[in-house]
Image (cartoon, rainbow, N blue to C red; front, side, top):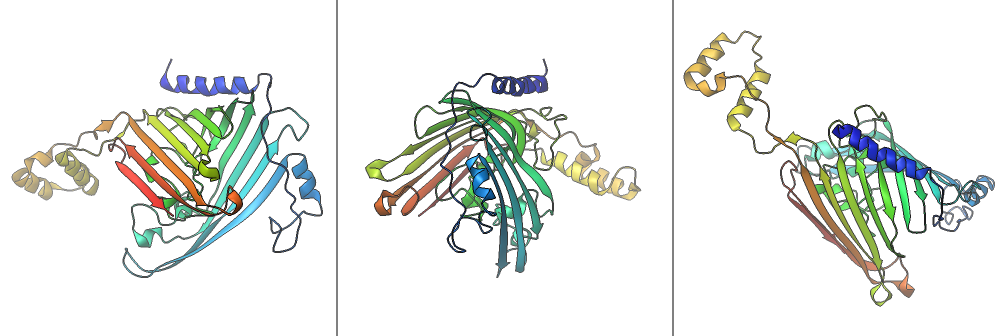
Length: 368
């Protein structure tokens, strides 16, 4: 059995589990009314004449959001100037129990459209100052399917998730995990050492809820998945990404906090960061001056001054595996009436990787 076949077999096994009888029910939040005044209602377009509230009561919610960003570079970087960009987001959620179908099922469909030009290029930073500017593709005016997932809870504590998985907000944090509502800089919105994980890809995951406030995911993704690629062809030909994440909610002194740990491993072959400099020089020379072009004078100079460069370049050295371990936490230090989502708190992230082929060995961010 090939590596690709084994990966698809695992994803297929998860899909078969989804079709088995449901013995538990998924937990869902109470329906919130979309009504209210212009400044107080949760969504700009309101209840749609009451239709939106009725759909929500049946477990169907549809949202369209628009994100607009105006950023400028005052000094430094590769250049200066102002950039305007943003994205439109389309989200459909369906709760099968509320819809009157079966218990424990939920469907999520999420797509986004990018527009404009960000300041990532003029800034020239390694880590994008505008996370939205690299989604769904860097400074590309395209629409992409980010998520198409179905989750089925088999018991109160065990479920499965299959489909196209969006990993952008996977590194959850109360204060710093969403570029849409919190930090726009990728260095603060996520732990950037996890660059080897695809932004969006087809795969599957087990979901375990061991106790109230705890959740564990363990799943597999193809390493080459992209938001704009919706095909299954050759998805796992390049290897697999295996990941496990666990999160827990704590309440010391009645103040809410969260801890999250993630471990990721992939067997996709990637170019090593430690290459033979002579071979790299040969490759650059070959790209700049192909052998089929007239280069007799150049060849004579190379033979005289640098004979090692005269040989044809060899393949790049490859690393066969890569891994990353991430941890983050957030903790409220004060909140009015012990509110679970308002107050003053701290957050911290830390990540470590193999450092080769991953270009980032360590990464961390912290804030109040």
